[in-house]
Length: 408
Image (cartoon, rainbow, N blue to C red):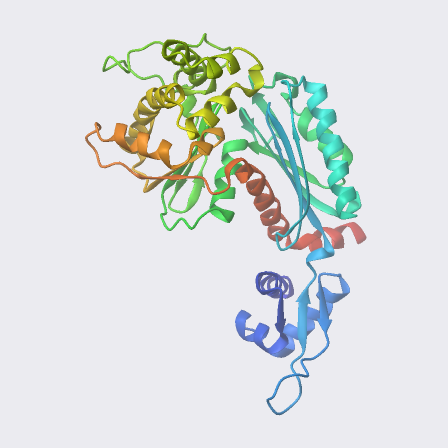
C-alpha cells in the first residue's frame, strides 16, 4: 500500500511540479497524514523536497506547507539516428530538455563512424548539462529499419547496415549505467507526436514518415498499434496493382537494395530522379545542376525548389503526391483513421503538399481522412524517445524499488 500511495503522489506531484500538502492529499484521495508520511520517505530518497510555507497568503491560519517534485533528481536520454542525422537530447524527470546535440552528416556514414559520432554527441550533451553518467536513469534510441524492441536488436536496416544487430544498444549501454531501449524510428516519432505535437483528439490516426524511406505509426483507440511482429505500418513494402496510366509508371530512379516497392515509387530517390528529368525538360538549369551533384543534398534541393514554387519541382512532387495518395487511400480502406500526419523530410513542403495530396485523394471513392503536417518535423522521433524513457522511469517507480533491491 505504501508503494501504491507513493506512486500516486509522485505522479500527481510530477504533473503539477509543486503543491501544498493539503492540495496534494485532496488530489490523490488520501489523508493528509498518509501523504505526509509518504512525502518524508520520498524526501529521504531525493525525489521530493519541502519548501518554505507560503507567507504571502492573506487567509488566516498557518501558512500552507509546499512540496516540490525534484525534477533534477535524475535524467533520461533520447537518441535519434539515421543516415543523415544523429540527434541526442537530455531531459529531466518532468520532461524539460536541459541539453541537446545534433550532427548532420555530409556523406552517409559507415557503421563505426556513426557509432563514434553518437558517443561524442552523448558526451557533449552530458557535459553541456553538467550531468554525470550515473544520473542518467534511462535511454531510448530510435533507428530506421525493422527492430525487435524486446531483444534490443535491429533485424534489418538497409540504409545503415553497419549498425544492425545489437551494436547500437551495446554502444550506448557501455557509456551509461542504465537500461537502454531500442525501437523503430517511426514508432517513436508517433509517440512523440502524441506527446508534444499538435492536439490530436482523434483516437485513430496514422503518422507517416516520408523521406528516403516510408513508414507509418498506427494509433488505434488512442494507443500505438505494433502488430504481431512489431512491423505494423511498414507501408514502404506495399505493392499496388497498376491501375491508371499514372499508377502504372515504373519508378524513374534505379531500384535501391532493401527498398520496398512503395518506397521505390514515392521515396526520396524517386522524387530526385523525377525532378531532374522534369528540370531538364523545362530548361531549369539551376535545379538540374544541383541535382547533378552533392547527392546528400539533392532531396533538400528539390524541397527548397518546391517551397519556392519552381515549376519543375512542383510538377515532380505533384506526380509523386498522386502515387502517395494511393497509399493513403489503401490505409484508409483498411484502418479508416480520422487523421493522417505527414512527417519526415517531405513535411517541409507544408500546406502545398497537403493540397496536392487532397486533390489526388478526390479520385478515390471513400471519404478520406483529414491531413496534417507534423508539428515536430524531424524532432518527433527524439521527443518520442524521451517520452518512452520518462514513461519507463515512472512505470518502475522512479528507481525506488530497484534502489531498495540493490541495498538489500
